[in-house]
Length: 320
Image (cartoon, rainbow, N blue to C red; front, side):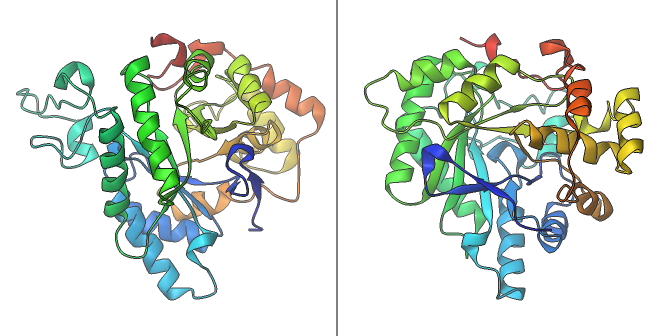
């Protein structure tokens, strides 16, 4: 796969690869990351709440040791700060145990501010959280390319303080760029209006696919130079049987997933599809050397269902 990247206008001269591998709910992160890197991927997306920063970093280090022609600077790693400190006693040891707690209630994990009562979204909490993420990546990973505030839920004061902490990570050189995830236009404007903020978010990572397009938010971010990164671009496979997508995929001789990912790219949106299957990882990378015609782009764009089409829990406008 030819390397395809776009500049991060607000973090120049850094560029972000248009295609990345997401490892949310990955059951074999290490091998999936190795498969992706071997298939030409150069962008990996993890997070504290995924409980696989260590596996991601270890796979990168192994790949680099076996491929001396590839350097650390060729691989773009993104991670995210969760709203509470997941290193506290009693927190879930892995994502599976958090997502599927035992029925006796013993797994009612305190992974949100509402349950824990306080947040990691403070200046010092963000600095400490970032350092934990970097340490988790392990030997050979001495900086993180992009680090995000994972959600807006703790509120405006907490978001500001956490952002001030992330600014320190950039100034230290340990983070190359910082951004946000699941934030609305209002959240971003509120942040950058503050006089203590001297770094504008380089990225807003949101759920984005043909059925949930966040058109106004995407337009706002792109006008501001904030790169939009799409998580769940393939709706975890739930909408790929759509008749319009099926018809267009037959027309081009491509898989439905390839058509949807190509549509995202032509909308100027970075994609981070998740898969643990080597064949799917390879198929999802075959996005170059062809493009969708304008009329097919328009047919896919017409599938938008607004926020009702979202798959996950995050409606950026739902939070203070």
